[in-house]
Each structure stands twice: as C-alpha cells, then as structure tokens.
Length: 147
Image (cartoon, rainbow, N blue to C red; front, side):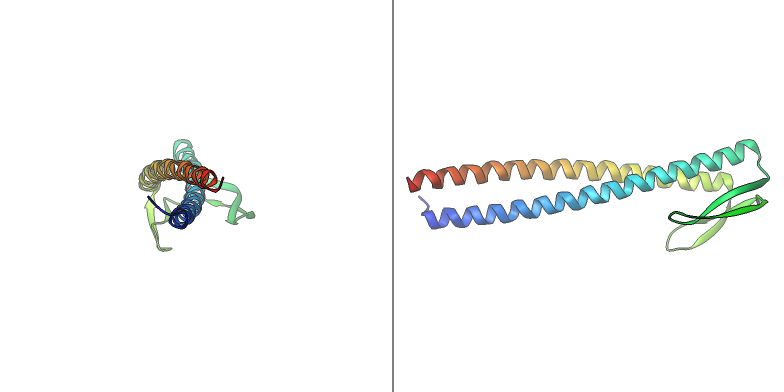
C-alpha cells in the first residue's frame, strides 16, 4: 500500500499533467479557430474568382484590401492572369482556372487539417476528463485517510 506522501506526490503529478493537457487543448482550439478563419477567407476568394470568371468581367472598380481593415479604391482592367501566393511569399502568375484549382487544393488541405485538429481536441478532452476523475478519486481517498 502507498503512503500518504506517495499518494500526494501522484496527485501533484496528475494535477500537473492535467494543467498541461488543458493548456494543450487551448492551443489546439486557437489553431482550429485560426484555420477556420483562413478557410472562410479562402472560400470567399474562390467564390469571387468564380464570379469574375463566370461573368467574364474585364474591368473592375471598387475597394481592394491592402491589409486587415485597410482598403484602397481601384479602377482598371482585369488581366488574363492573376498573382497567387504559393507559399513563402512567392507569387506565381496563373490563369483564373489554375488559381481556382490551386485554392481548392488549399481548401481541401485546410478542411483535412481542421478535422485532424478537432479529433486531437476530442482525444485531449477525454484525457483531461479521465485525469479529473483520477484526481477527485485521489483527493477523496486522502480525505478519508485524514479522518
């Protein structure tokens, strides 16, 4: 049988692990939210490109985003090709069809990533619940020992 000190040590270790799991869950939730926002932006971009393609828009007039919450008014011709960031801030000129294909591949990758993150969060929550149960059990045992 374990001594009270040994049980208290196990309790401390389980509690430390529980806190670590909770922090990990929070980090994964933030990552999930970030990727969800990226997916939303990607879907909007694909939709806009499909509308430009479908309507054969040759001229554009409106506001273009320069950054978060910053826009500039532009008026001009829509070129045959558009510049697409393919990673590491490297832009490649491609047709609208190729851009849509590229972005749909990214969309698939983001959806897969979101599913994996969600499964990881579920697994971590199960671990946290089990640790909570073990912690409460050890605390109850120690309370019974002290009486």
